[in-house]
Image 1: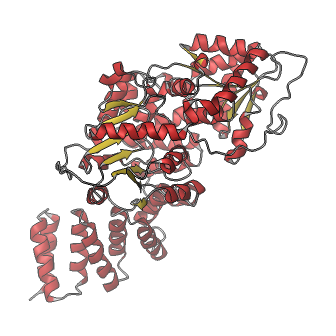
Image 2 (image 1 turned 135 degrees about the horizontal axis):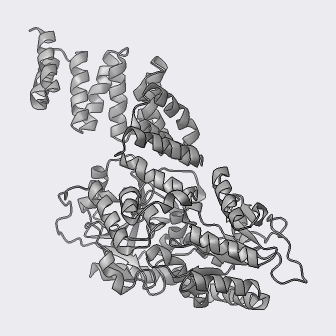
Image 3 (image 1 turned 120 degrees about the vertical axis):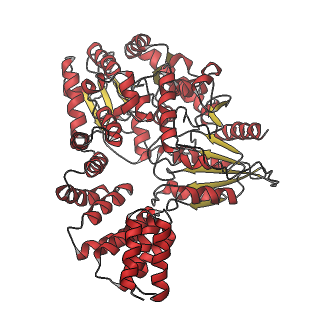
Amino acid sequence: MDLRRLFEQGLAAHQAGRFAEAESIYRQVLRAEAGNFPALHMLGFLKAQQGKYDEAIALLHKAVRANPADLTALSHHAGALMAAMRFDEALVAYDRLLARDPRAFDGLYNRGVILSQRFAFEEALPSLDQAALLQPGMPAVHYNRGVVLAGLNRNTEAMAAYSQALALDPNYSPARTNRTLVALTLCDWDWVAHLTPEQAFETAPPLALLGIFPDKALQLRCASGVARGLVPKPLPPLWRGETYRHDRIRLAYVSSDFREHAVAFQLAPIIERHDRTRFQVIGISLGPADDSAIRQRLKNSFDRFHDFAALNGEDIAQRLKDMEIDIAIDLAGHTGMSRFQIFAHRFAPVQVEWLGYPGTTGADFMDYLIADKTVAPDEDQPFFSEKLIHLPHTYFPADPDRVIAATPSRAEAGLPELPSDSIGNGFVFCCTNNSWKITRPVFAVWMRLLGQVPGSVLLLKAAPADVRANLEREAASHGIGAERLVWAGDIPLPEHLARYRAADLFLDTLPYNAHATAADALWAGLPVLTAMGEAFAGRVAASLLHAIGMPELVTNNLAEYEALALALARDPARLAALKEKLARNIATTPLFNADGFTRDLEAAYLKMMG
């Protein structure tokens, strides 16, 4: 038998797309010669093309052992490992490839992508820079450079990288969506101002859209479009109506953010307080692990904790089905590294959206969305694909166990001292929201307040130089000097919470409110002033304020918001009375009552179970 000629017949069939014929011939070659390198290599490559990664990896591993000098086989083996989400092994394989050929494009590019997904941006950038030099005409390279640059807070450079990707391919949608998010982060309001609602619908990811337009119908359209893109056609359901007879209801909390992340901090006190006589509580981690205290706290709090980050979506769904989960709760929606599309496999009788994303997923495979009647009143049901289920006070859990450090002096916090003989002079307005939530109309209100309250300052979250430059330029256009903007550096959470006590009044943003940030400020005793937005994302601070018994700090529009902020800055006694009331209410109202919140949440789960 001429194995070379037989292999070439298989290769011709493979190249023509006749995969079954090619596989049959490759296997015939391997039956005759088990270690035949070309057949092992191409059969493994064919299996990778079919998405049968475990089989592909085994075959390609044998091929690499049979011929370690063949760089193409080594690249295909690494690629199959990466496609199977076995990233540790893929990284080792790509490093082995680059040791043989430092200019191997696949090794440089995919190594950069893997490191980027792990937030190792400093290490990822050189690989992607070299890949861009080797193939400057590939849009995906410039897009991934943009992702890394944005991760390094080099936002202006990220904007340029996304623009370069779009210059090569105007239809490269990931670059369009990320460019919009970076423009928001930069507070590049001239760029954002050119977006019409329809353009925003086409170019902004759902999360960014929430910060641009509060149109609930548009938000639903955008979310639904993205959900359809993630799951173009219905998938066969894994759960087919069978009834589970467990002694306790099995809850699975599914998230990519069981790490140093706001969702983890919000969730931990609830997991710790679940009634174990009625519920078994399981954590499913789909994102990167870190060695943070909050991740360890969660791992210790769940009855069972599984790290499925390295599995593909189908395998994750099957494992959750095998666990016989009663209620599965997605905590991400359209955020960051969400993989909520695994719920399209319908692995649980009840599938719920909660906490991580303040709006609808637009997905027909999510049954319920947990909200409250402030953020999503009954009349808003038409703007949600999920059925709304309301908690009685607020949908937002707040941790009552966080430690606050000793209150710093104003000087220690980098803030002006307050002279005892003046009203307003030295007043500290505060907003530590991420810069992408700050909009031009809200910033204009803040600048007018600084102009009318002599000697006052605005404490803002620390920002990269390009963001600071844009905001300081905008302040100057209102006649406000850069020294009136004080940038709060990153410090440990207990010290960060204590710093709020050196401020006077927290000013919220619209159309996307402070959420965890507002809860932090209230926990520290700092009054939060908000304006009621039109959609969920712009009503969260109002929900928190109602839950802590401070509805007088909820205004109806920016005009009322500005007037009340000015009145409070000019009336120390009135502001002091608000702070005293807030201090009393922290211990006596629902917001920081984690036990009561958990019982309300469990009642909602029981209602979902029917």
